[in-house]
Image 1 (cartoon, rainbow, N blue to C red):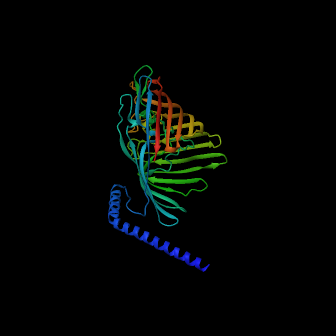
Image 2 (image 1 turned 90 degrees about the vertical axis):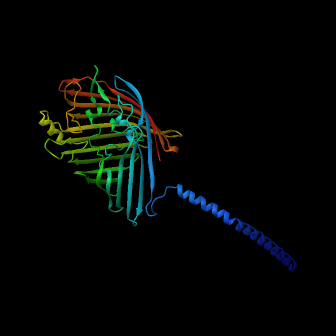
Image 3 (image 1 turned 90 degrees about the horizontal axis):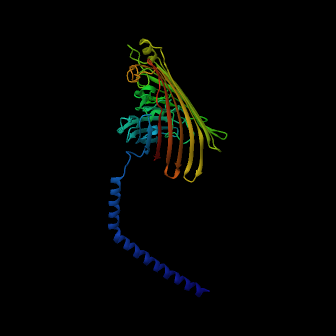
Amino acid sequence: MTGGLRMSAGRLSLLAATGFLLVGGASAQAADLGGDCCADLEERIAELEATTARKGNRKVSLTVYGQVNEAIGYWDDGHEQNVYQYTNDASRTRIGFRGKAKISDDWFAEYRIEIGIRSEDQGALSADADDGGGGFDLRHSSWTLGSKTYGSVTVGETSMSHDGITQFQTANIGHFASPDIFDANETFQLRRSGGGNVNSWGNLFQVLEPGEGSRGSLVRYNTPTFAGFAASAHWGEDDIWGIALEYEGEIGPFEIAGGIGYGEMSERDEECMVAAGLVHSDCEEYGMSLSAMHKPSGIFVTGAYGVRKDNGRANLLALRGFAPDDELSFWHIQAGIEQKWNALGKTTIFGGYQDRDNGHVLNDNGGANISDGAGGIVTNSEMEMWEVGLNQEISAAAMNIYLHYKHYDADITSTNGSIDTEPWQTVIGGAIIKF
C-alpha cells in the first residue's frame, strides 16, 4: 500500500513538471509574438474608429430610424393616362435621430430630429409635369423634458396635439391609405366632360383635411398614459393652440385606437384666411377617428370625421357679395380583414369611402376666388372617393408591399352653373421598408 502511494506521487510530480514546461514554452512563444500582434490589433481598432459613426457623449443615447416608401402610380384623368414613379406622400421617406438621457428614476430628457425625403415629389406631378423634383423638409427638431409622474414638455418644431387625430388605425394600412387622400392628385386638373379644365384638385378641395392639425414651432405638453388614455395640449406661433385626447388599448377581444382633438388658429397659413383689413385669422377645427379590430377574426372598421370653421373666409365671401360660407368638412370610413394567411406575414384587404364638402372655397395662398376655367367663379365643391386596397407584410424584412386603387368624383358649381366633370382614378403599387 505504501509503495503504491509513493509510485503514484512520483508519477504525479512528473506530470506536473511536464505541464509546467509546456505552459512556460507556450507563454514564451506568445511573448515573442506579442509586439507584432498588438500593433496589428491597434491599427485595426484605429481604422474602425475612423470609419464608425459615434455620438458626442455617453450620457445621451442615439437611435437612428426611418423608412423608404417608393411607389409606381398609374393615373387616368378622363382625357389622358400615364404611369409615374414617385415617393408615396401618404407616408413619405424619412430619416430620424432620437435620444434619451436619464436624469433620475422619474425624470428624463429627450431629443428628436426628423427629416422628410422625396426622391420625386408626388404632390408636384400632373398631366403636364412628369418630374416633380425631389428634396428635403424638416419634420421635427425638438427637445423634451419629462417625468413619468407629471408628463412631459416638448419645445421646437413638432406635432400639434391634434396632428394625426383623424388617422388612428388598427390595421396595417396607414403607410399608404390614410384619410389625407389628395397626395395623389393635388396638382392634377379636374377635367370638364366636354373638354377643358375646371381647376386643380388641390385648389378646389384644399390639401389638408379639416380637423387634422399639422406641425409647427410649438410648446407641447403630454400627460402620462393612464389606462390607455393620454391627453396633450400645444401653443405656438401667433397664435395657435389646441388640445387632444387619445386612447390605445384592448377591450375584450377588440383592439381599439382613437382620439378627438380641437385647435384654434389666429394667423393666416395654409389652412385659414384673413379678412380684408385684418392681420389675424379666426379659424377653429376639430377632428376625431376611431378604429376597432376583432383580433380573433382580423375584421376591422375605421371611421374619421373633421370640420374646420373659417370666419376669415366667411368675411371675405360676404365682402364680395357671396353667402358667408365658413365650413369645410369630411368623413371617411374603411373596413376589411387582416390575417396571417402565409408565412411572410399578415395580409390586409380593405375598402373605403370618403365624402368631402368644401363649400365655397377660396385660394389658400391669399384668399382669391377660384376660377371655374370658363370665366366663372366656383361657388361650391363636393367630392366622393372610394377605394380598395391590399397590403402584404414581409415581417422578416420589416417591409410591406401594397396595391391601392382610388376613384374620385367631383360635384362643382360655379357662377356659370353646375359643371359636368370627369372622374380621376389611380392605381398605386409600392413598398415601404422601415429601419
